[in-house]
Image (cartoon, rainbow, N blue to C red):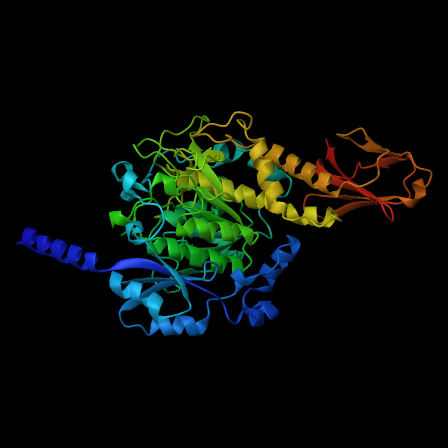
Length: 558
C-alpha cells in the first residue's frame, strides 16, 4: 500500500510540477526614484550611508525599492504567486502556468521582459541542456560533520593564514559587521560557544527568508558551524577568526529542496545586508542543479553575469560590501566546477586545503566559463575545527569549502577593520578601498605568480596582505614630498626623518596604529631623531604633511 501511495504522490507531484513554472518579471522603471534618492534614510540605514560615503560610492536607482503600485497590481493577479523580489534587479519572482506568465507582458506595460528559470522557454539565453549529464547531485552540497575524541582547536586553520598576526595587531573584527547567509543557525541562541557574542550584543539580528519569519535559530545546523568558524569562542580551546565582529544571520537556503527561489532569497538577504550597513557577507552556498532539471545551470552559465544570484552578487559588491563565497565541493566529480555566485567577478571565492596545505580533492575547480581565475584563494576546508552544534562544549571535525570560506571571511573582516586607519591617513578620494584590500590578499598568496585551476592564487598570508594593503594605501596618498628619508625602518627605539627642504619647520608628522588611533604627534621636523621607545611592537603608519604636501609611509616597530 505504501508503494502505491508513493507512486500516486509521485505522479501527482510531477503532473502539478509540469503545469507551473518559475520566472522573473523584470520591470521597466522606478517612478518614485527621485523621492527616494532625495530621502536616502527611507532606503538605507545611516551606517550604510556612511559606508558608501567612506568608499566614495554614490546612491543610484538600484538602491530604490520596487515600485509599490507595480508590485500590488501583480499581487492581485490570481493566476500567479509572488515568491520574492529584488530592488537591485528590479525584478519580481513569480510562479504560475507558462501561458499565464507570458500573458502578463501584454497586460502590464511596466513589465520590461520575462525570464523563465527553464531557459528553453526564453526567446534568448543560454541552454543548460548541454551539461545535464555532468551536473552534480545537490543533495551532497553540505558535507556532514564527524565527531572526534581529539577535538583540537582552531590554531592550525588560523596560523596557516597568519591570521594570528592580524589579531596581535589588534585587528579582531571590531567595528565590522558580517552577514552570514546560510541554511539555519540551530542552537546559536543557547550554545556556550556563542555565549560571548550573545553577552556582548554582537548578534544584531537577522531574518528567516525561507519561512518569512524572525526565527533565525531554526531549520539547520550548517550555518551554526559556519558562524562558529568566525565567532565561536571556548576559552583556551577555540577562537574564531573574527571574535569581535558583529553579525546579522540570514536564512535563504532550504535544505529539503533545491529551487531557483533560493537564488532570489539570497539576493533579498544581500539587499537587507546592504541596507543595514554590513561590511562583509559570507555565503557557504552555491547553485548549479535544481529539483527541476530544466532549471539547471550549465558550465557556460558560470560566467558571473548569467545566473540571477551572481548578478545580485555583483551589485552587492558595487554597494561597498566584501563578499566571500565557498567554491563548492564538486572537485572530485564529473562536474568539477564552481557554482553560482562563486563565479561572480567581485566575489572572493575560497577553495579548500587540508591541515598540511595540500589541496582537498573535493574543492571545486575554476576557471569561470569566460576564463577568469576562480577560486582566488584557499583556506583549510578539510577537517577544520568547528563548534559541535549539539553540545557547544567541544569541537568537531567537518569538511567542505563551506568552512574554508568563513575562516577567510573572518580574516577579511579583520583586515577591513584597517579601513578606518586607511581613511584617517588619506587625503585623496579613493574609488573603493575594497579593491585594494582584495588585491593585497591575492598578491599575498603562495601561488600568485603561478595560479592553477583548482588552487587559484593559493593560500594567502594575511601578514603580507596587511603590509601590501598599507603599502597600496600609502601609494594612493603619496604626494610631492620627494626628498624624504626615514631610517632605519624597521625601527627599534628611535628613527630619523630627513627632508631636503629649506622650510623643514613647516612639516609635521603623526604616527597612527592599525586601528586609526594617533599614538605620536611630531612638530617641526628638522632631520631630528624621533623616540618611539614607548610604542608597542607592530605596524604603523607615518603621515608627514605640510600646508600643500604630504606623504604616507609604513613603519614597522620591532
